[in-house]
Amino acid sequence: MVPLLSLTAELINPSTQQLLGHVTLGDEEDTRFAIAAAKKAFQTYSKSTLEERAEYLQRLHDAIVARADEHAAALVKEYGGPSQMAHFLVQASAGAILSAKAALNTIAFKDKVGDTNVSLHPIGVAGHITPWNANIIYFCNKTAAALAAGCTVVTKPSEMSALQTQLIMECVHAAKLPAGVINIVNGRGDVVGAELTRNPNVAKISFTGSTGVGKTIARDGAATLKRVTLELGGKSPHIVLQDANLEQAIPFILMTSFMNSGQACIAGSRLLVPENRLEEVKAALKHAVEQYLKVGRPEEPDTAIGPMVSNTQYERVQSYIAKGIEEGADILVGGLGHPEGLDDGNFVKPTVFVNVTNDMTIAREEIFGPVLCVISYKTEQEAIDIANDTPYGLAAYVSGEDLQHAKYVADQIDAGVISVNAFHNNPAAPFGGFKQSGIGRENGAYGIRSYLELKTIG
Image: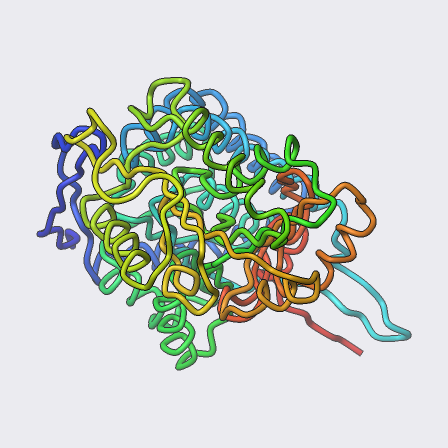
């Protein structure tokens, strides 16, 4: 039977609004074909040795690295990721695969508790739902964990990342992995993603995306008691402590606040500043944003802020900027409209709001664009309270000269991943969120274990 492929979506270059091509969208039947292929492959792959899995992971890594420049170019063209960020994301993707391979040596797949044998077994077919903002890193991280555990995979990437997806699958073929172990179905979330979530032959869902969709997946997956890993939204705080050195803190603030043009779930979009240092920080921020955050074509090596992925996302960010003004916040730099000379793409001015209170919409909701809210505090405890006064808890950042004290403050923040004084990316360390930022953890051995079930034989 031939899969039913009847719908297409346009793929638009966000820098130029030019049509890149059309994406063929799969439907429920295509998804079932992919699940069936993964289920069949699982019968054999689940019995593979750790050495075989390590070899497959190495092959996938090598295939990805061999075309690293092409992957970066796809990120730049498809969602407007700045070139420097695109190359970093490709390197991080390859690193995630090697991290999973290394973690195989740290997991006790067989253990003994007294006279009882305890063993770990792959859970089954895994459904992965990945977003458009750097699809390659989500694909590599989730796939590597599943393969290491002995699971097979069906991935639904965002339909806006079809160039990345095609290149990734060419790498999968080049790696000569067993047939049916990795399957991809392009399509809409409410079609392909919904089928993955409902289908009884899918044992686990790993989803990265919005909190609202994550709640739907958790609800609908419960009907078949699916295991779920959810990496969701964030409204991450960055606490600038009283003793912070601004020469060190300002570059850290710019990097964490505006990474990936602000289109990052871990962006530090709330900056908490001591009241008695507010004017100093404002002056330093204004200068730094105007001097160092170049908005421009993402392929240019000195571009820091590229376009928003779509015109819809551009309008969403504009609406939040307008809402901030309406609710009484003041613009320190940036504001509404396109940057000068960039009217033909989805470009947003990097915008810093001051006189923000934590009850304002721009301080409560995830904007997913280059918008930073500056909130002042009187005492350190108030800063911690403000940082935690959010439904989210994905990431957080702390700047302070006294490293031991800065880490003490970090420990008081309700977030899954906290960086102190510099951005840290450790592919072996657990990644995930507190509260409505998600369920479960990814990366290294922590991610692999979420694809394993325990069996006890006494």
